[in-house]
Image 1 (tube, rainbow, N blue to C red):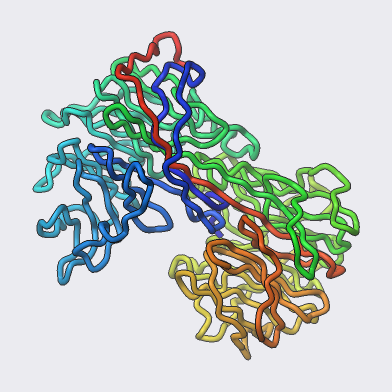
Image 2 (cartoon, rainbow, N blue to C red):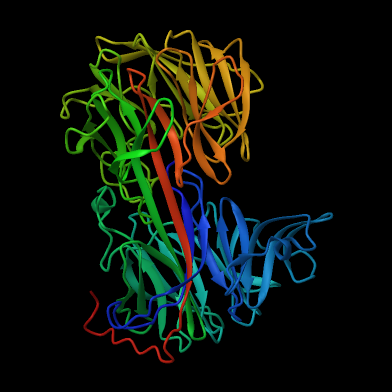
Length: 606
């Protein structure tokens, strides 16, 4: 199960003084938009670009392009779609919105009312010169090692020793500045002369975010603005530290000397810089996540620890395991580790949070076996600190370890996983149930797998994929009934459509008991007495917890929270429900930039 980034709301930022340091009188940005997000990790804003007139912005979010009017911050979906049957990609091209989609029998990129351009890839990240006469584009999916620069009629390809992650034209269109990241996680900023094709490395060893980055450039073309996780060369080991303060900050890079200086500093991720005249635009993300509990009958969510999610109870109900990190955009899921906290019968902490499962790359919360001897969890464990989520050498499987010995060997139970979800033990401890995409199959379609376990030896005897009813599209979450005779399944039907199914333990005799709406991996659980299934579904624009009988009927709402409540788990005594409480804000801010951008970078390379 991919967790590139967690939590739930968003905002975009315009402004702030372009001062030598953030403390040197930078103005407080003005918020012009705040974008709410009700997903677990899928909703981050990217590819923010602003028109040369400063009146509109394009960004990408939840797999779709969005057009925003500035300074009002109002989205204009009508203007984005005008004249096209479907729009799946877009970019600002000077003052024109370039869109990719379908118009009758034509499919391609449309600029104004012109004929579709089919020479630009469907998934292109498109950048244009300020007057819109020149274009540069690179692929959003593999291969990403090149960029094409030229005109709509023809563009010259350039190849780099790494994945292209950003590009910006100089104000006069004579140069394009290209950022790319190599296999070791180090980024380079390259200058490309449009007329001659000559290239020059401006600076190397940048600690940039993989994926898409919008780059800004000063009106006098002296500085390129980039988001960096640190001022120096990237340290791959630090990428895997859950509480490392590696938040993206905005830096100015002198295009002649390569010197760099931080121009924006905060305790949050700041990225996607744009400079339009006297204004600077950029994105900021402010996440919040916590583990909370509510009474099983419903009520107010009481947070018991910060910066954690995905709680699981120990068999005696006295401990909760959870996943923790800061949800940094630069590192995604790499720093996710598993913690544990002790609680009393009233679900109040009786200890400080402690590390439980630690190591390189992503680890999901640990599930105790019913006898308390073992823990099982999903892991991407590589032998060395890799720079990226999908770097070679990592796994994507179910792991096992003795529960009370942090130094005991980690036993790999599977070798076929692809975006594996959390594993759950059967009531008798003889099996483990988990979801996984099918390698070589369709992405984002979850299948269910069962491991038959040798509890004494700590090994899997066999792995079987359950054949589910044809009506189940994607079984993204599943749990056992208390008697071990049935499974409850959260089925992602596509878009916001969800369905709750009950099937036999072999996948047969399926019965759909509820259609509802969701927006991410909401999760569900079965009460210990077998009378209730609790699940996370949308109530308006927020995920909340609901309860329903396994036989169907009208759901009963359990929470009325201002944030998103998901991943419910009943305590073994049935008195409490632990849950994730998540929110994220992407801000769009505005502010005046000074008329001169005279950053004294020399001697301040940080």
